[in-house]
Length: 105
Ligand SMILES: [Zn+2]
Image (cartoon, rainbow, N blue to C red; front, top):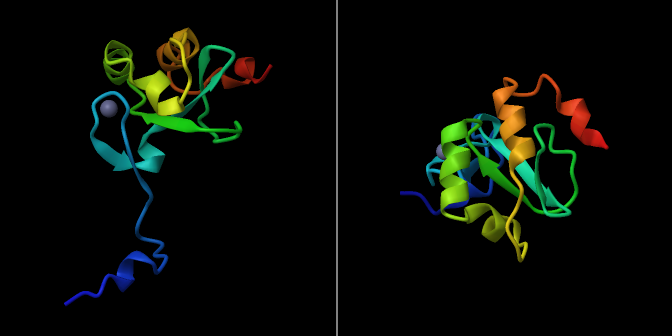
């Protein structure tokens, strides 16, 4: 019978779990792409370097499209308006991370 103590003991085998903003399925943090919002743009943040709130997506165009359809990203990132996700789309279409330095500004 568990007293719930296992939930507070860090375990190297237990990876952090996040919910995909697109399909709402839970997945290990390392399987998801972190995205952040800046100046009305939604930016991919595969190395978790951006400050502020992040949202998580499967790195697929399908989940990005689902998140857009449901307007889930502005809600998850706590921004008032719509977000331009073209940078995330470009990142996904480029094959996940080959040109991320372009986004560092
Ligand atoms: Zn997903």
